[in-house]
Amino acid sequence: MLDQWFTPLHNATERGARDVVQVMLRAQPGAVEITTGDGRTPLLVLPLCEDAADRMATLEVILAHHA
Image 1: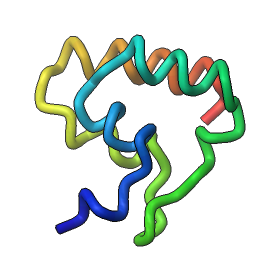
Image 2: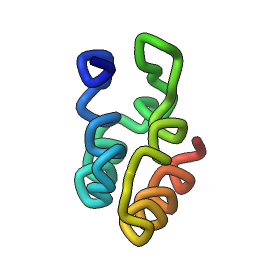
Image 3: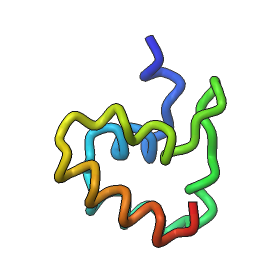
């Protein structure tokens, strides 16, 4: 299962948890470039978020951190 490859930031991104992603990236801005075991950044995990509104809100946060 791929979830075991995800960091907490990747998990929050996949779920569209905008506020959690924002807190994590404020604490560690470079985390936006951390990859999973198969090479995906949080930006590349974002399409897994099923809710379009959450996906867009999370995208704005990730892009604000220069992904």
